[in-house]
Length: 214
View 1 (cartoon, helix red, strand yellow):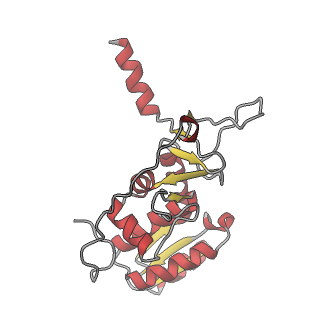
View 2 (cartoon, helix red, strand yellow):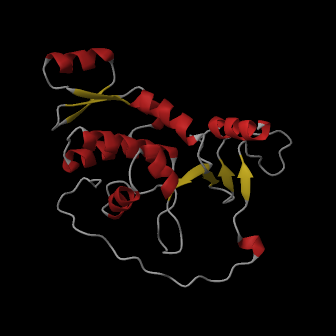
């Protein structure tokens, strides 16, 4: 059973089925493929997963961050980490996470696995959310199982290790690169048009070629 990070939480909310209103064909989201093409642009523009024009729905965020949907839902409802692109309100909408949101989800998961308390994780998340996105790749988070330390230079990491204060480290830049590759293979949604973009997974293309060759 996966942990949400708060052992005091028991059970969950019951699902409420809302009546769906009829939608015309023009109301339905369009489906495209990476690379995406903006209207009126003659050249093909490939949108990187880090683009502000892309958002990721709950199931995609879970797959990329290595968490369960129960964890995702609980963290959003308790305010630990809510989606910055679109929340689940009104009830008919779907949560939409930015690249930065998914990056933080992945970091939260690693901190929980290292035994860091939820209280300290909340402090770390709030700090990372306020940091400039350009600065995130140069950060290393060190923790001793109780406290999370932010290091911006290799020497700071060495000093923590010498002092016995750093027994577990997260190089945010490495997590960033790993996440870029993962999200590039998964579905995304354009934040400006609502168009669903199908990820390009090289493994899937290789399997299709093999099937055609048989």
